[in-house]
Length: 171
Image 1 (cartoon, rainbow, N blue to C red):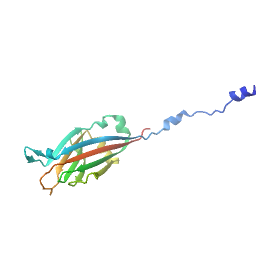
Image 2: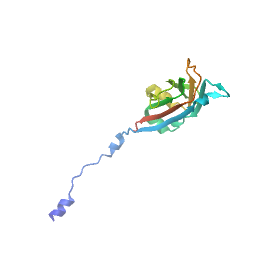
Image 3: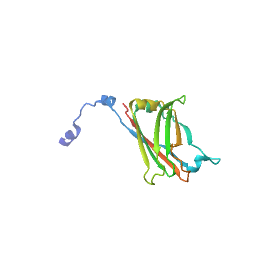
Image 4: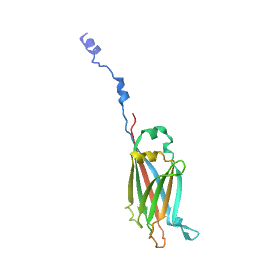
């Protein structure tokens, strides 16, 4: 009998389900952003060296209102290897819906970087810069020959690898 009484009584407390209303989640998402390799031969068209190469890509990350509304910071990380005997400017231009420029990221890439020692750059978007990033719908990507870089082009390539880290707050 004593055992039955001991098992049937327990300690309880009131549950506070309102705690769910104050829950704040702060996930961090890391994703590949871009990966490109441009061969030296791509700068030569019909035997003539071209001063730049470019491409424009859609960037529809912010079509999702949830992501757009909860993003508080974004870090873009770039890593570039250049084995061409020329220095270049690598530009990423964030464009709005009318292809108007919002923000430009310029990375100066010296000639012949040492293999295994890439050039790196981190760009942090927060506050006003983050607002510009959220308006981005396309990204223009150009590689242009740096002024003063005149030796004849040789073999080699420019390799770009990048990632983005998104910091969210969900309430």
